[in-house]
Image (tube, rainbow, N blue to C red; front, side, top):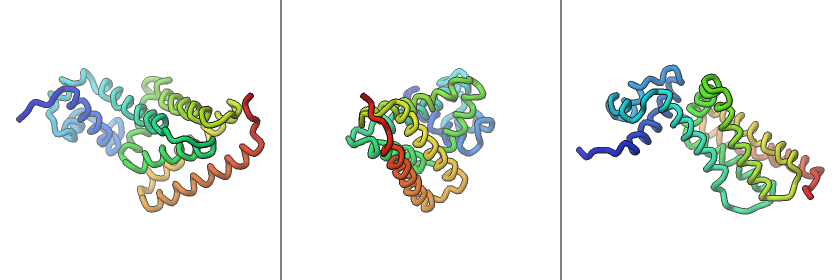
Length: 199
């Protein structure tokens, strides 16, 4: 059997941890369960990670980087409304892609907030900053209006995630994506009609 490099094993353990955290929560995500999910022995997990805390740190970074890539990698151009709409849909599509990722994200943010205080806020802060930058690139509007739009996107995406986690109904979730997008469109039309333009 060919030897699997440690970097590949770490990636396997991170993906396995997402599944285990989604199923059992942080407290139930034992190293034994994670190793079993990764189809590896426990000794290999302990070879790759000094502690479960280290592994969870990498899983947390995986989640954070997934958000950053969704928000930053969209290189299509549009006005503020179109950019805001694409950002919201990108996050909702990411959630819809994997209910395990959605569940693990919620668990990990709560865990990081309890264990590391500000680190639990970091995923939100980084995601919101990326949204602000993208919106600022799309049009000249005041920073406080950009902050409001970023908040509305986050609130709609979080509500969508909670509903998707609760019911797990993909067909309903697709319809709810359209509702969330139309709510954003209506709010943007009302807000930007009176929004000051940045000078």
